[in-house]
Length: 120
Image (tube, rainbow, N blue to C red; front, side, top):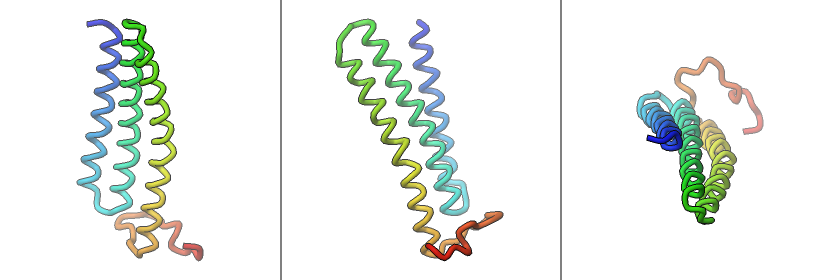
């Protein structure tokens, strides 16, 4: 097995571990805020490593075949990663803020910074 394949398999394994942890956290945590935290943090890292896997694979294929479609795949994957890094935390913040506005309180929180906030 060549070293590029080993790198691809390692990145893929890390991605699967993070995504599995996010799924477990989504099912096991007690309230919407901790579930949201597990889902967004872990799956964001899992998706980051998955995009690195796709980029490593496409660069490897480009080196072997010298076809431009593999470089295009790497660039498109990088653009998708940038979009994910912008939208995933923003969406999680919006969901958490909406849950707090609806009156859903954290179950095991030590402190609630939005509790006394006048601008909800």
